[in-house]
Image (cartoon, rainbow, N blue to C red; front, side, top):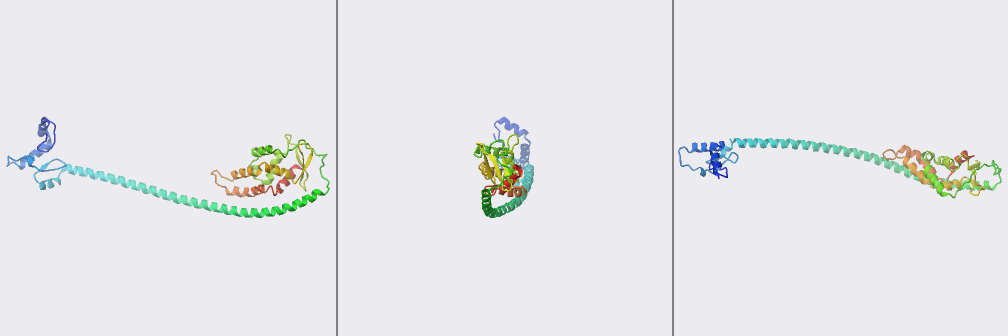
Length: 316
């Protein structure tokens, strides 16, 4: 059912009739139509072709509809609501843009800070690499010098051994309670792995000498099993597995024994860990302290001078 005044649809005739007598906006349309057509009682409402899309008011001409549109309250209300919605949307959009600008500025600052930190770290890395190259070059020179010196010392030592000398301690007065077995590799590996620590490594070859004296060259009662009988020529004596007193010139046998037990690798591992700070970065101060000591340990096989000197001092 279609209302002939306002074009509203209804399902039943009773609903339509009730609408015609009670609906205020429809009654206003009826009143306006009756007013415009009071002199023409045969006016047919169905001939109205111009209706407002907002309040459903029907007008007799396009001009009247245009005039009405400028005054339509419902249109004005909807327009005001739409404007408010647009203003709210604009405000939200502006706030969002401000937040994005702030995020972009924060990211830009973070990037600049990160770039500066990376540049500083690159400088440190370049410095360490330069130092390493210098150390490598110095190490090559040291090796050549050490080799020449070692050759001279070997010649001197061989001549000294060939000469008959009176030892400050002879085999009959040596008090060596137990034997040493330089073939027991498992024992020395286990001792180095479990007992060597940073206090030994940080003192280089001297630290290693004290390590072997405390952990390898004494028995449980504190008696020496390895004794220096001639400190000036670094001659040491010990009992082998058969109980026979043997000579170890310049501690070469003992040096080879701990090298075979992995003293270099374990010392390097301990030293490298000690050089790192809490963040895992290299601490340059510790690195510089450890560098010379590590070099002396690395060169132990070709130059054990500090090792045998310290050993002679603590086992005489």
